Length: 88
Image (cartoon, rainbow, N blue to C red; front, side, top):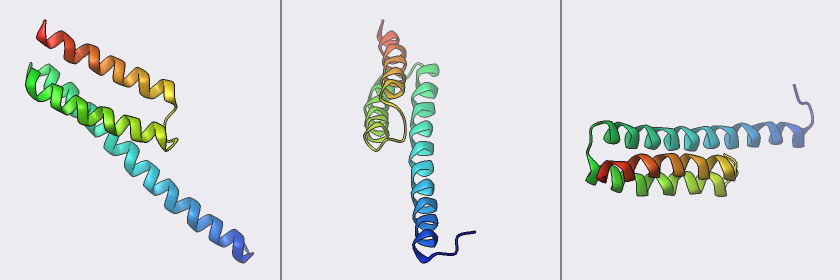
């Protein structure tokens, strides 16, 4: 365990940041699952609006460095393909 005051503070700060990052990552994953569930239910209108919200969550996670840019792009691409195939 850290003995020095600054090291103790770093541990606290890192734990807070880790908790915030995990919460945001979890929210992003929940949004992705919500879109996939709407796609399975063939609900095109709600899936499109949910996709826009999900894309914002993914972009925010990429911006904050929670996930890698390519990972975010891949997730959005896969979801967009699913949503676009609903209309066809």
